[in-house]
Length: 347
Image (cartoon, rainbow, N blue to C red; front, side):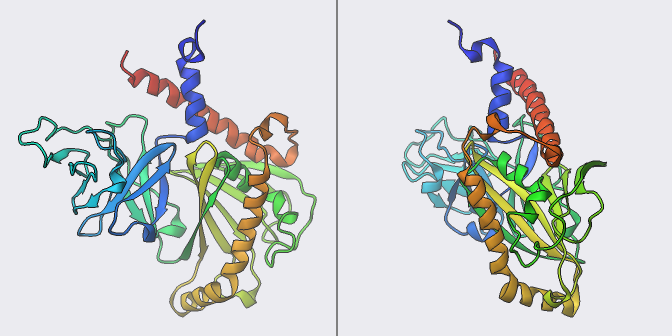
């Protein structure tokens, strides 16, 4: 009897990509503070990866696998431009090339590029990696939202580990209506109607899902953009007593760890400069940060309590138009990338 893989390798690849993360995108994989001198082992998009910094502070990323016997390189030593395997001392540089096999003279393994390497960018206090379908293709430039690159804005990074699929995390943000219920007691989401009409609006890089007739009252809209990295943008109105700078913005990423775990990265942003920036940062750290973590914990608790097969028993309605549109988009991307992956696989 034929297996599913034998019957339709493209469909199998599409399901795997959708479950573990859409490729050909940049993802934040660790806050900058997490990568110091010692090698760090992580799992992202179902792939085992080792990160380390060289003497100049640049971050390197490789598949967390020694080509000799398969030991984890993250257990080894940081030699600057190279990482050395703890098991037998084999040294591999940031390109994935074996540079030295100390235990064997003239070893044929030396000089071979046999470990997958990742393009790395460190921006806005986080380490980003490019996850390409074609490992031989060059990564494009990392194009982040304006709030994370402009000097007009100040931002703080909040990262949390959630025991749920990254797809549920995206669904959660693509659902503005939950703010009026789940976060009803929040200092920033207690106002506004609990019944709203919704609409979807296209943008040059994605879409906006928004309430009709209500703006700057609650969590009233969300934007999803794809600029080579898939991000989410929303704003929460603030009272003047919470500092200068207008509405409080959020730029979010959902980074898959594996099929059942993800990391959420939320940059809290505000358009402030000079002394106003100092006031905002002080107020955030001293008055607001704990409240924002409370809101994130409410989201986490609800999502982690949902069964793995919750999608199989859903009854979606008007307020779910945004997440339904994004789900279809992700499914199409996964299908297209599955065709590309199968075509690249040797017969």
